[in-house]
Image (cartoon, rainbow, N blue to C red; front, side, top):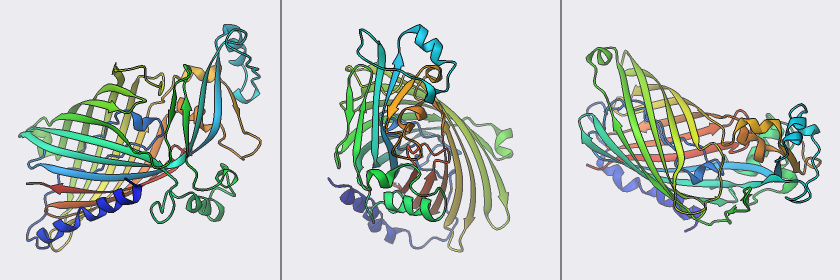
Length: 406
């Protein structure tokens, strides 16, 4: 199925429901901060379970269905990382900036080293469906499925994440002329290839759709009268995810916790702030010899959201949210002391090394999300920017709907 067809289905899925919600006489109930799954469309991260921080105040009272589409522009030119095995070479490299290190790889017998090769140039489309099921007054269950593909990202299907539009912004507003080499390598490319140190290769062809996996999260919302009187709510969750691609057929597990505070204002206006952390253990169970997506099997993330909500005369709500996310690196940071890189550094201005070096860094992003809520359906749209400019992704946009089933 083409990405265009999938996006049309997502847009049209809401239209048959609109007739049920045109008349609302009371305020629409809002359960905490309204947030889509804002896990990044990272070219390696999409192959593993990605925990979405839960910022709801209480368990859902009715079953809900969330449909979501993400579109992220990834651009990281081909680069090969060499990690020498010789302790003497590692010691020598540790005293040098990485771009001054010289390493002439011959073969594994004469110059033993771990080799990793990266090349990512595509717009990644991620499609998510999540079912929120009430279990008890303080408990609910979230069951999700994700799929993804790599596309060229041409207009009008990738307005914000299109190569030409991004480079127009760089050339005319901020960033300068072709700062990372998109123009040099050509717009609307789909190059997606990664080889790990054991020679196992991960690839994705243009328009090739993958069912990434399914996951289930059990959430518990503790009740405390003292905190409730202060408009403070907490929750904890346990996640298990089954990754189903041929490159990473495995099981991940994780835990999360969050706390939020609400400030009521006049005329049914509210300010909410929430923060949470999650920790995930990747590949607890491997069903095959998988491609190595990173050597940090335990990954953590923290998320924070600030949301302002107002209600219309008809009782619907509008919510504007600023969201921040910080994730631990994919690879161990000590590799900074001894890696050597080979890439096309002479052809582009900057970022030729990003395919590897950004895996050693914390990944951060800022998101602006708008939600319009009605009695049985919420509409969401967001724009995410990677201010650290690691291009994995550079910019990401998304849309979604939340529909109350019963």
